[in-house]
Amino acid sequence: MSAADPMPGTQSIRRAVAMLEAFTDERPSWNVSDLAEMIHLNRTTAYRLLTALEQAEYVRRDPTTDHYRLGSGLIALGGRAQRANPARAVALPELEALALASGETATLEILSGREMIIIEEIPGEYVTSASRHIGSRWPVYATSTGKAILAHLPLDALRPMLAQPIRPLTAKTIPTARRLRDCLADIRRLGYAVADEELELGFVAIGAPLLDAEGRPVAAISLGGTRARLTDARIAEIGEQVRAAAGRVSHLLGYRDEARGSRGAGEQG
Image 1 (tube, rainbow, N blue to C red):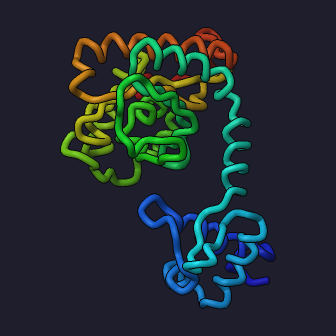
Image 2 (cartoon, rainbow, N blue to C red):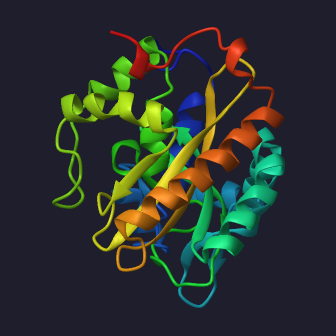
Image 3 (cartoon, helix red, strand yellow):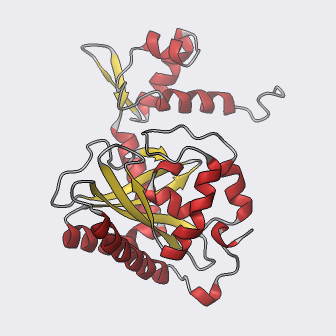
């Protein structure tokens, strides 16, 4: 057992994870040689890992092309993870109601590192960005849900989130961590956050956090649509709807205003 690999087998696990993460929307299939080169493995090791993953149905091989794709085992595993999230069951009726009332797409998202992941989506009447779907990951600083969660994190959890550089996705993305920090108090005061073409030009989203019994943000919900439909007046109207829906879900998760033990970043100096 080496110092670099203190637990036996962890190197193989890390390699398998890297292999699975190489399959993206932009590159959904790989042959063995290209995948081995991509994750810096020799071809024999890559083939052995792919064989093990194929047996678990985490990847599948096309016998015609010899290319691999993600398999049905991951769909089943992801579904279990999705259903296990405590916020999903209580948030789903509110998401459906928001989408029906507004005609816009409603999402439930969770924080993972410095990214937000969509774990539930209820399409509205109107078509929105095709790039947003269950499993999509987006930088926390460019999303309404991400900013809503940041505004409710305690300072010790917020600091490392703001310590890394921001890479603007559009000309309207908040450009610096200082600017991002400065907007958090207003988000807490309003009860919702707006991402106005900060993630994608022409796309606007309004998000609010779901808080647990300790006042911690465990997820966030949002409504999103095109800027042409979501005028400033409508953003304010939808913001109140999303805030109220998030409040009802938070109540079901055990949150009470008077029970909050610590303040979010927007209230700390």
